Image (cartoon, rainbow, N blue to C red; front, side, top):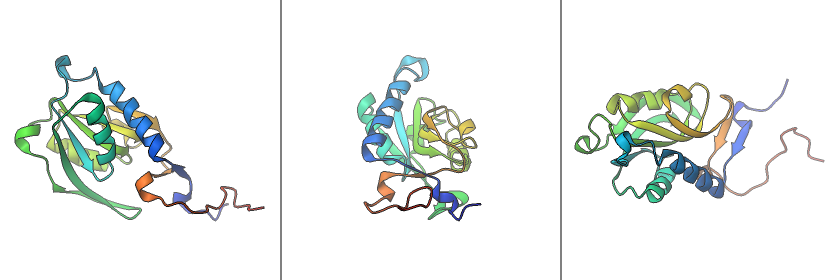
Length: 168
């Protein structure tokens, strides 16, 4: 038995790692657009999808970037997802030719709500967990469902207790 909290099984992602992973995702997405015509636009899921979307937009020379805001977390507790800002419907239509970008496919609940707005879009995330994978078309790294990913925008430099709890 351990006295660690569930989120202490952490996977820490630096800005450098996020940048490398987003570029790797862009390379995978390069030739996947419908009919090989290139992607029409990116829709970033705020807030976590914004940094990867910026990198992918640059790498693939996509100039049209919009956002969809879905609130599903209060700190580290997940609740029912709610769309609080949708992308321009004239831009995204049914999602054909649209790349939806997020940092993580976690439980899939957020992506399920997003797919209702753009059912034909291609969903790409940097990281995916087993429950979220069915909602994701492309991703770079899979992590276990019980792993909490610490993204660079969530971290500050400070001492961290070793995983084993021993601090000799």
